[in-house]
Length: 82
Image 1: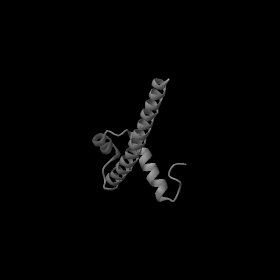
Image 2: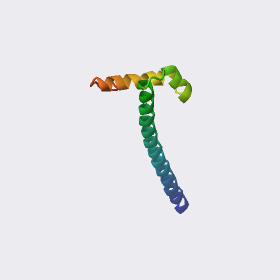
Image 3: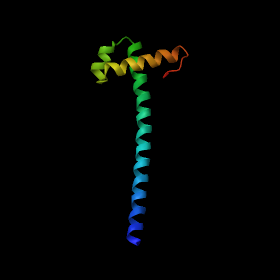
Image 4: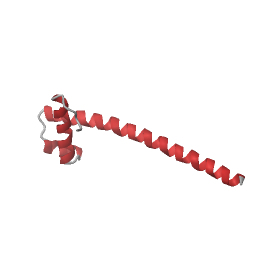
């Protein structure tokens, strides 16, 4: 009985550790995406083509298009992600 309780406590702790690790990772991803989006829009504003941004970064063309659409909506005062 004690062994089962100990195992469950260990399982709960393990699950919580992974939950926290996933939260940390997700936060870093959001932060990295914001940095990425700023770099992409800045590069485009500076005159780089979407194709050049794609080749340099390895980002998909659809990702670049999405970044541009979000920027345009934000600049127009619209909801960036309707």
